[in-house]
Image 1 (tube, rainbow, N blue to C red):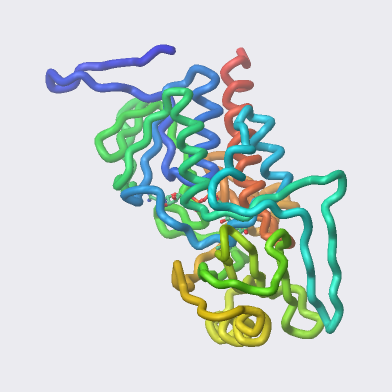
Image 2: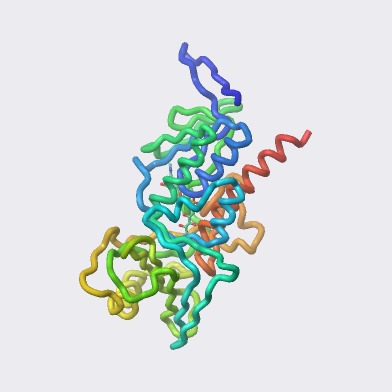
Length: 312
Ligand SMILES: Cc1cc2nc3c(=O)[nH]c(=O)nc-3n(C[C@H](O)[C@H](O)[C@H](O)COP(=O)(O)OP(=O)(O)OC[C@H]3O[C@@H](n4cnc5c(N)ncnc54)[C@H](O)[C@@H]3O)c2cc1C
C-alpha cells in the first residue's frame, strides 16, 4: 500500500486515495472494498460514535449473502443481541400470508448501531481510517485534490444516506417512521411482520421486526411523503402491536422519521456515479431492502473504480 505524503506549510500531509462521506452501510462496505484493492481510504462520519439509526433493522438474506461474498463473515452478527429470521408474515385485507424462506435461508433482525459497528471493524481490517464527529459541510478542490475538513484526497465518495450533504433530496423519495420497543409479545420472534392497513393500498405498511431479546423495531412506511405519518403510526401501534404485548412495554428509541433514498432503482438513471447507498437512490421501494442495495452499490462502485484504473 502506498501513502502519498506531501508537505504543506512545512507540515506533512497524508493524501488519501478516497475520502468517503458517511460511515453507514454503504460507506463502510465501499471503504473496505477499496482498501482491499490497496487504496488508502478515510471515512468522515458526522455522528460522534455508532448511533442508532432510523431504520427497521431488517437485514435480508440477500444482503447477508452479499456481505459474505465480500468476505465479511456474517455468522458473528447472530452472536450479538439480534434475531434469526426464517420467514415473514403479511396481513392484508383481512388475510394472513406466511412465507418461510426457501432453502433454510436466514435473514437478520438487528440494531443498526451493532451492524454498522461490525461493518466499520471489517473496513478497519484493510487499514481504513474512520473519524467520528466530522460533519462534512464543504468540499474544496485544489488542483487534482479535494480538501474536506482538513483531510486531503484524490476522490470523494458520497455515502451520506438518504440526503446529500447539501440537503438535496431525490424526486419521489418515500418516508418511514420507526421506534424501538422493549416488550414481551405473542408475535413470533423469528418472523418479520407487515400489516397493510389501508384497503387495497400497498403504498403504505406498518411493520414489527424482532431485533433483539424482547426488542422490537416498529414503524410505518409510506411510498409518498405523508404528513399524517405520526397518526398512522399511533393508529397501527394500537390496532396491531400493543394488543400483542404482554405486561409492561417502553421505548428504547423513540419514534423518528427519515426519508428513504430510492427513486426507483428499476430506472437506470436512478444511479448517480458519485454517490452510493441511499443517496444514489438504491433503496427498494417494495420490500424496504435498502441495506441490500446500499451494499450492492458500494461493491459495484469499488469494482468500477478498479476497472477504470485498468483501462488505458
Ligand atoms: C424508517 C426506515 C426503516 C428502514 N428499514 C429498513 C429495513 O428494515 N431494512 C433495510 O434493508 N432497509 C431499511 N431502511 C433503509 C436503510 O436504512 C437504508 O437503505 C440504509 O441505511 C442506506 O445505507 P447508507 O449507507 O446509504 O446510509 P446510512 O446508513 O444512512 O449512512 C449514512 C451515514 O452518513 C452520515 N452522514 C450523513 N451526512 C453526513 C455529512 N454531511 N458528513 C458526515 N457524515 C454524514 C450519517 O450520519 C450516516 O452514518 C429503512 C429506512 C428508513 C428511513
